[in-house]
Length: 372
Ligand code: HEM
Image 1 (cartoon, rainbow, N blue to C red):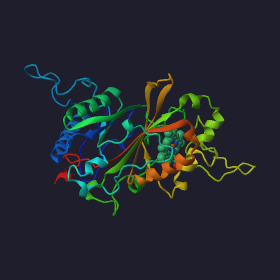
Image 2: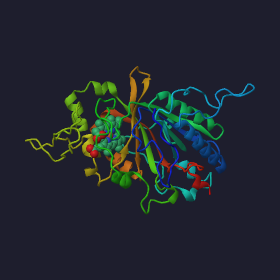
Image 3: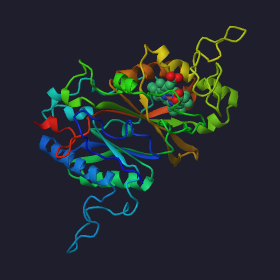
Image 4: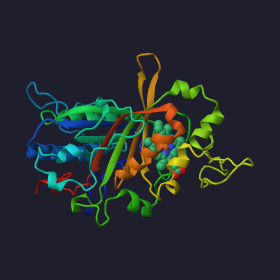
């Protein structure tokens, strides 16, 4: 199975799991730091980095069977023989890392701040925030789960788990992939950030004014757990579903005509003057044409938590997006939250933002520059 190197070969290279062709499965977990000692955080980031390098190479993080005595295994063992499975683990630092606790306030990444309450938020405190994040993506769900589980074990005494989501069936596509579908049955990821130029402009932190040099080649991660009211959605007529997104269901073509990758024409109108793509459709509101040219990289997954207390499907989208300024997400969501036809069918129940430093060079570890 495919292997992604963890270490950068030059300064300013990004971590995996951002531009990496989306793997099939994802486990996302956030943590609260239970220490207020900067060295504890430093040791954790160093241990995590060394362990992630091993895991991405398909190796264990220490012995499964202790050599002697009645020892506890260092690695829990369930990923033995499964190979690297395209694993990437992406580490993020939340706003709390830069509060008064650790004395790192002067190193806060320029655009890192908790996301303010946005229209139509329905956030559950227990699914919100976190001081650290791990996004483990792999083509084998057991490999992704093992990575997060063993990294969480390693954090004991320093950080406690805050919230977690198991994602499946990527809801975004890489260059060589056909566009996958979200749980509403629509292709998701058709118009996304794809070219080098777009990544430089919208995703990587590398512009003058973006702030601290140690974040160069890094980015910001915005994660939302968005529940879908699937029973309501499934009872809706398909023509209305298409109006909600502004695209056809099977082909994902814009309602202004053409095929999936035809540029939508937001001005094209029917004889009666109404636009073919509804002005309150998801794509009319989210498109860069309607938002001062701003784009974000969407790299989400579907999730399910089984059934809720009423016996209804409890499922939705683990929305994960990357951008060089989280304000770009806020701008879009402020607008979507106010007018999107999709709002009738979705509810934002979880939210968090993290700074994602660049990948470390061999011999170093994630965010090492913070502790100099
Ligand atoms: C486009 C689904 C939430 C931003 C799309 C498309 C679908 C979709 C089907 C059209 C295909 C494509 O271009 O990818 C969903 C679902 C959501 C959701 C089911 C929630 C459950 C969000 C949120 C944001 C967002 C929270 C950002 C705040 C965008 C953007 C586009 C898009 C920027 C591309 C629009 C364009 O340029 O045409 N989404 N989305 N989406 N979505 Fe979402």
